[in-house]
Length: 192
Length: 422
Ligand SMILES: Cc1cc2nc3c(=O)[nH]c(=O)nc-3n(C[C@H](O)[C@H](O)[C@H](O)COP(=O)(O)OP(=O)(O)OC[C@H]3O[C@@H](n4cnc5c(N)ncnc54)[C@H](O)[C@@H]3O)c2cc1C
Image (cartoon, rainbow over all chains, first blue to last red; front, side, top):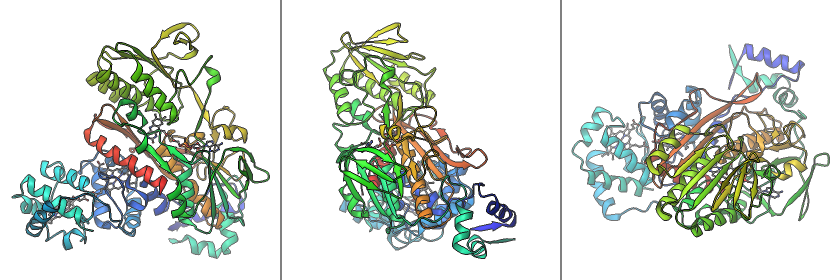
């Protein structure tokens, strides 16, 4: 919330001529509340294919929005919507959602796959997706407790190459079979 | 050189400064309000969200939500029921008890019959309610006087979800194979610009699967398909080639209920076995009664920052009834407008500066059981024009029919109905 001298002069003139429309630029809440129709109140999604944003890593969030905006990350709607926001507004929203409490959802998971997925996780994901995917680090998002359907969609996109991975990650996940991906999706979704 | 605005305001003498400075843009008083009572009319896409967000932002404000029914049935996705994808309307029906309990909203099931702007009161079938700020989100009413002989029991509109939707579905089920469905679309603006074309797709799907040899004639009063034209035409060709007879610039002005015929501009006759008339529309009845409707006689002009009526002080109009500039009349828009309105009512009641609006719209439409498309937009206020305008680059439609969008759309409706009901 910074104000330039030029704006201040304008504001001062508003004091005299009180008909000049003046309001604060959209707050983080004003911007972010508009996303809730799809992502759920305060970013806690109730729909199995829509990602929860509550508590997500700020760095990842900003990165994701920038990649949507540039078209680097595949998207159905987010590529268009991200173009509606300035870099500053994206940072404000990232901050807003990072502060929200993540809500546990009730994805039905297969316990056999969860157990198998744990092994896949330990071998191929653990280095980056810390604490069973519950912790974020820099641009690595929280994946624990994310909706299963959303995780499956994203993993498909990694596998097909539509969504890019870093070279390091690509190397690490290269040996994974379709069944491994499916199992680790159940594992992540099962984490609360 | 920059400085914190709040400090700047302090410099000017705190509260009084904030009031004079921050609220100069709204139509009414610039003093912080003493009163803390908000009444919301209409428990649909706009009203539920306005009530909820005011309470979430400031739980010292008393909020009463007045709705005529004890439940609400969503228009979004009701076309999927007509197409046979949904077995009934239960997944589209919400109740208000959780919303009221979670947020301390006073629910009143009553019909609002009048608004006294001077006295700041609302008259209902269950007594009078006073307000400091009033939010009106009553949806739409039909301009049935523009269609001579119109009877919704014979030629349903199904443009308010519920018994009308069920009636249309029953008529489709009862129709003989080889029959003709007629769908009439009014001149824009109407509730949900892509809605009639989604309905065309869903009815065509139903006919293809259940009524061999049948067809649907679409009589569109508009000169062309109003929304997502390329995508609808593509989907119709792909799935329903030869089944949809689309006729632009055909305005239905009269109906003959006995002979199941509609008349275009009083001359050209079209016969149907099932006739779905979507009549031209205007703001909800109560908006007319309360004098909130502008010179066009149809919709309510509002301040784009606060959604306060430009005609009546302390009354805000959101959703389909309002003239929200470039934002289309949709459930998503109503949801987004409600939050903008709530934010600034709370700000004003606390003597704080107003916040510029930022809004979103997205409408999904189904073309088949598995494919959907979307239109999106992010909206802001153009201060010079004092109007809601789209942010460049954010408005657009899907590149193609998409199975993935159909999957996301299901979660959209789940999320937005959960927002409204909890
Ligand atoms: C077939 C169809 C498909 C649609 N699909 C989509 C879609 O996919 N996406 C989308 O975003 N939008 C869609 N829409 C549009 C969406 O339904 C509307 O834009 C939305 O409902 C508008 O919200 P509202 O709050 O203005 O009105 P409503 O949701 O209609 O709510 C108004 C409420 O006010 C109550 N009310 C009115 N007058 C009074 C009174 N005097 N006293 C007490 N209560 C009163 C009514 O009972 C009602 O519950 C669709 C519409 C249709 C018809």
